[in-house]
Image 1 (cartoon, rainbow, N blue to C red):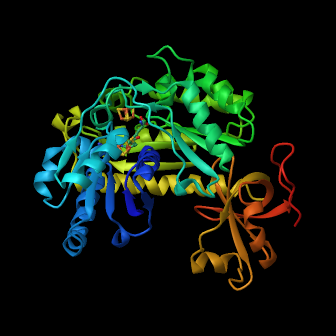
Image 2 (cartoon, rainbow, N blue to C red):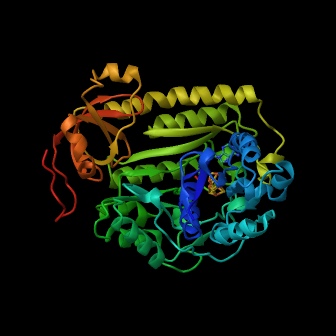
Image 3 (cartoon, rainbow, N blue to C red):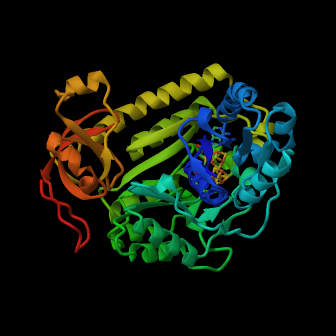
Length: 474
Ligand code: SAH
Ligand code: SF4
Ligand code: F3S
């Protein structure tokens, strides 16, 4: 009998990957994915605890499920992910209609847990963590169908204990998967049509170190050799562990995309020290310089925290100056928020919400200028993009800016190697060729830069994919 499964995922790419694993594991029990919670027999909420706001989102979503459970008492509701790991039993106490709470190390055990609930309707909590990697059976699901890009977790957990961060507590110790398992999984994905993989870890740079496996750069070389795969990305890279070998991989490996997410968090040495980041502003800038020496057109993005406890106006100015020096392609910036267990929560010199809000706005205003500048620099250039598929509808103001005819123009979207979204238009005749254009590398001349995307025109509608691939006739 088929049963319907709905998964609601909040949080980082690792949660997206875990959700795929949950769906794959539950398939043999007869569960198929559906797109709305109303249709579901089993609802899983995959949670994130990184900031207070993310945690609030979890409880507001759970609140909305009360009505569904009333209507359909047989509905099973499970909470997984980082809040589940952190709060455990408290979630069962706080939300009476939750059937199961499963932690970040329990994803592989989920099918057994659900089976048990189906048979005895009890409530289960499983937040046990282990010190050894638990390889899960990899299964393709409907989530993989037609997908051009995919995530693959290569290292779990984190041992860095940045003082603001909850991750080491909710994801456990750093543990790397074997290169064999990773390569095998990517091969399966490629067979199913995936053309680009993003290798995931809280700090991919420490891949394999503890276990004495190969280095991260060596793993990248192995992935680079996979036939049919066109592109490789990775995230996240801790600046303290960014090796020369890895920097040179950007020149050495043809499939490695020219983009690095290198979170700096602050431009002040005093704050970096209190954050326990283990690098200085100078060391960070040195690495940025080396990256640009090796790969001049590499895109660099980062994460920033504003209003860390004790951050003075001068510290904040240091951060703004660092942004001006690096000229990031884009930035994710967050207001500091206390997290349970994270030691900065016990620091005394907290900033007011108002101050944090103001600093965040100043930082975002500054960065906006660089994001637009970087996009504008590409106008007139020809870029290679990997076509993701038909693009999401543009806002009406964007449509006006590029004089779209919504009746006849088909909009496509792809990404450059530097991870910038490029939309382009092909006439109606292309719609039937959807499958053929999707997943292909094509050359596009960039005509227009908007704040979050670019518009371009295909130079020649001919795929640049690996040899032997079907060619596409426009
Ligand atoms: N492992 C990654 C970060 C993962 S968390 C790294 O080390 O770069 C993603 C981002 O959330 C962090 O880079 C940081 O900018 C932000 N973040 C983490 N904890 C936070 C907190 N307590 N308050 C505000 N932002 C936080
Ligand atoms: Fe958190 Fe630091 Fe680990 Fe990143 S490296 S997950 S910020 S503790
Ligand atoms: Fe959130 Fe957990 Fe990822 S806390 S950012 S889902 S590792």
